[in-house]
Image 1 (cartoon, rainbow, N blue to C red):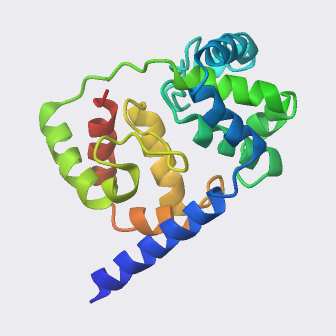
Image 2 (image 1 turned 30 degrees about the vertical axis):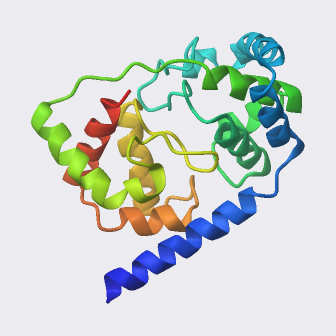
Length: 210
């Protein structure tokens, strides 16, 4: 009974989040337009490559992070990246460095950077096979309902495939401990049952996904 109630609550939360994200901004509409205009998309990607010099030191030249506790942005959904820049800008998502950096970028640059990273490739990692097998089972049980079977997310839910294990463990741990850097009731509920071994296994599995 408790499991059924929890499932219903999670579905309601997903619907509420999706509804909020459905209020499309001008930038989101522009992304959709770019997808239908290859010449404009190429120009935006090139502009984003140049504008992303702000991000290279931490997130790498092509969005593959140089720091294991910093997320890869390569292949990430552009709508999701834009939403995170808004959250850093308004303080909903907390990181002193990122909050300061975002203020230096124009709205057009944020859009271009998001589109640029979306076109980049993140190479899958290599992990212990037994741990990956366990992680796949835990992922399907606790995470796939929202992040999808291939862990690529969607416009409002992040891609997790190919992320560094260190970043994934850190991020999941922050939700579990409710440290305040990230606030998401759906994630709070999802990670509560996970112990450290399960989190480690899930992170290993996700790191190996293309």
